[in-house]
Length: 500
Image (tube, rainbow, N blue to C red):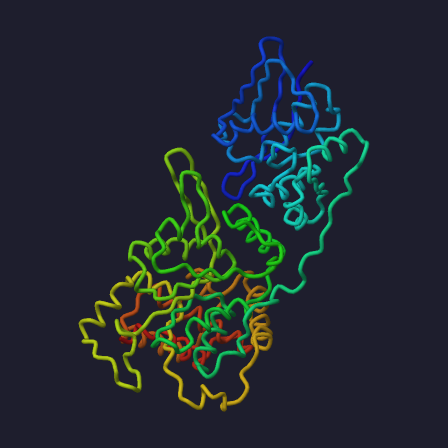
């Protein structure tokens, strides 16, 4: 019977559903058809496979060939099915043994010379193959990425002939192994480079300890971007699952995943001209956007009021849920988007409100219109809102003492985060309103101060609970079991835009 079945995987969001590549050879006039909802790139694979087989001196079957990509209702795209189709044709025509094919999964695009070219989305496929105990055969350029998954056998091949020689048992491919980068903080900018701005540095530490969102308000050149770029260096290290999730999203993106960045938290800084689709993801074949590429990392929005208001509003749901669902007419995809938002803005249109030079001449109406570009509901979802003022000259000269390094601050952040995980299993920013009452105990005096602040500032219920969460983080940094008045006072001080 001229039938061979080869295992492969499709790419749907960050999932890698199984695909059985079924090759059937029948008598009749020579023809080749691919069925199973293939996209254009998959249909073109027949020409790439024919060229690769003939160049590699294999016989291309002169029979009626039917290639079925099952399940039939799952869209297939890209060149990832070239290698399994080629192996299936050789197995169905008896040129390679098909007894051992059930143990393998194949991914890879074929050049006309028979060389294997890399494809996107190998890491999600490797995770699924490991769960089934199968051996994954990938192009050499994808081997480092696939080997990031523990307890999986990866075979790295540079040419179709190597794969066939292995299946014949003539020249076995040695399982590929690669060491992961050990230091997830190598090459990251250091917080010691920031001079002055002690309040902003403290707010950055609080934001890192509790995974809180942060908005910095200040004139140009005061160090807002510099501070934001140093947040990944003081965040706790990624866990194994978090690192795999972040790497899987990068793997399916157009940029691909750089193995050298394994274990590093992403820092994404899209330009203010970015569209809503660029930010949240989309396209006819849904791809992750900036908020998903910043999963378990930092999304930095500089010049926040310059972003289109409709673009900013799409952030509201993922800020709360940590996920984004992209729906199109033909398909739907869901991507994780648990990012830490850091934003920066000028205090007025010219940027110099409150500057010692007195160069600002913006009217009150101009300032109000400028700040009104950011909606109240979005501001309500930002935990810390601080001012980053201009620095005195002695601070610029570096005469104010040596600033703490990222490693020193990170040690305190890790200690506070461990307290949170031991107490509730998640960072303080993820506490529900009900959990705030249980995990953030406060005395009568603290509750009275909080109630009076809410009345005076006209805060919403969401802002009320966000203040409590920030106060809980400040208490964790102080190694305190209860939220005391100094912790609450500091949390209230971080609501700059609520004070007008």
